[in-house]
Length: 186
Image (cartoon, rainbow, N blue to C red):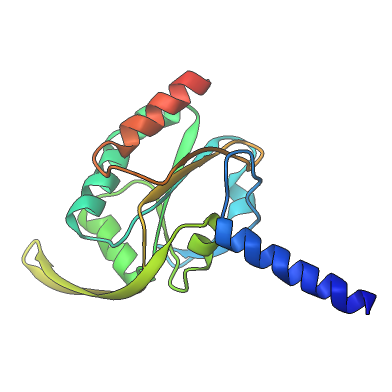
């Protein structure tokens, strides 16, 4: 009976945590994901030395997402000056992320969250994915994603705790807001 009670309590706690997501002060549980280069990216390998900006975006190669990613690219030296690194997370598959990174010369890692488990861990809402067809540099492309995440941004400190959370991100202002927060923190 005691084991059953503890099991139910644990299931309820995990469900409640996943539903509410992470808030300022919470330590981010470890996670792994496939990066745009096909390698396995592990959170534990990227905490301890720098702030980590984790931004969720709906879909590679779309207007707002491209503007947001290019702003992070263009302000990367400012972010580095504030002792921060960036990682973008979406429901796009690795091939789509690789194309997106190359097409816009992005200088940071993109993570594939095709199942939505990372978004769920952070509490970021998701909806169904889809296929996006377009043309870039004379090349037709089709990007497929299983889920579409909402646009949210988090900053983790060196201990892996959430120190910044924005669930109403403006794609064109996100990087400037992140930089402002980091400048006031450092």
